[in-house]
Image (cartoon, rainbow, N blue to C red):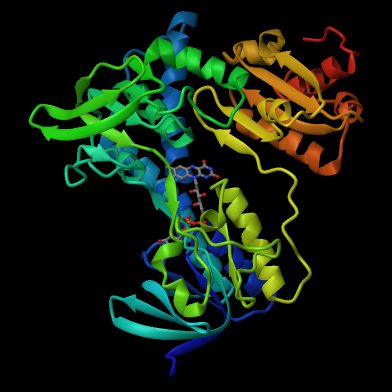
Length: 466
Ligand code: FAD
C-alpha cells in the first residue's frame, strides 16, 4: 500500500519505554518516527504517573514534617492549602519534563506524529490524528503503547466522584471522606497525599494484606503509621457495588471488618493496570497478543514477528518506568544491529509512601517459598543517629545473602528508602558479598550506613557505631 511517510524505525507510544527507545535508536543513527495519541509526550509516567504523584507526595511530606515538628519546638500552625496553586506546582514539574523531552526529540531529529496508531500491515501503521489519517511505512517497529487503569465495571464512572489515579492527580478538591479501593503501591501513594491534605481516608484491599509482593516486616512500619492516621483499613474485603447518591458514593462491602455499606465523598479505584496490546490492531502486523492484552517477547524484546519489538508495561510485570526504559534501550540497540539483550538481575520496586518501602532481588517471602538458603542481616533504624534525627526510627534495612555471602535480595523501609535501595541493586549486579558492603566506608551519619551495618550484622562483625 502507499504510505504518506516512511522511516527506518517506528516507535508506537512515547512513555519512558518509547522515548528511551526512540532516542537511543536515533543516537545509533536510525531514522525514527514516534507516534503518540496525546499532544504531550512522556506517557503515563511523566503526565499522569510517577512524576505528578511524586510532586504531590513531596507536598504531603512537607505538611507532615511540619506537623511532626510542632512537638519539637517549631509550630507552623495549620497549613492553608491553595489547591489551584498546588495543582499548578505539580503541572509545572510535569511541564518542565515534557517540554524538555520535546527538545531532546527535536535535537535528535526524531519526528513525533500525533494521533492514534493502529497497524495496517507488518510494515505500516495507520495514524488517525486531528488532520485525518496518514499511513506510516517502517522497516522495523517498537511497540510501547503502555497500559491503562483497570475500571471496575458496575461503578458509575460517569460520576466524577469516582476517580482513577489520573483523576485523583488532578486534585479537583479535598474530599472529606475518601475511599481508596486497592491497597497496592498506587492506591497507598494517593492515600498518603490525600491524608496529608486533610481527607479522612479509608483503604479497602481484597487480599489479606496491604502492598502484596513486599515482605511483611517491611510493610509493618507503614501499616502502623497509617492505622493511626486513617479512618479505616479493610483487608480481605471486596467492594461489590458503588452507587451515586446525592450525599455521596454509597459503597457496598463484602468480607473483612467493613460495614455492609458506607457513603464517601469520593472513591479512588486503584486496582491495577491493564496492558494496551489489544488496542493497536496488532493482528494486521501478525503480532501475537494474549487475551489480557500482553505481548510476549524474547530477551532481545522481539515479538513473534522478528522485525517488530515490544517493551514496557505491555510486555508484562512489573509495570515500572525504569523497567520500560531499560527494555527500550535493549530494543533500540537490537534494532540497530547490536548484540544487546535484557540481562538485568534485579528490578527494584519502590512505594513512595510515608515512610517509603523499597525492595529488590529475592524477597524473604520468595526465598522461603522457593526453599532458597539465605543469611539475613537486619539493621533497625532506631540505632541510626541520622534516622533518629530525621524521624525515621521505625525504619529498617534488611539484606539477604546466598551461601557464598553474595547479595541476593534487599528491603528497606524509612525516609529515602527508594534512594537507598540503589546501592543494593548495584551490589547484586556486581556480585558483591557481605564483606564488600561491610568494608566499604559509608559516610557518617547517613541512612546509607544502615546497608553497611546490615551487612556487618550478617557477617557477624558488628561494631557499635551509631
Ligand atoms: P506508558 O507510559 O503507558 O506510555 C504509553 C504511551 O503510548 C502513552 O503515552 C499512550 O498515550 C500511548 N499510546 C497507547 N496506545 C496508543 C496508540 N494506539 N496510538 C498512539 N499512542 C498510543 N512507575 C515507576 O517506576 N515509578 C513510579 O513512581 C510510578 N508511579 C506511578 C504512579 C501512577 C499514578 C501510575 C498510574 C503509574 C506509576 N508508575 C510508576 C508506572 C509507570 O507510569 C509505567 O510503568 C510506565 O509509564 C510504563 O511506560 P511505557 O513506556 O510502557 O508506557
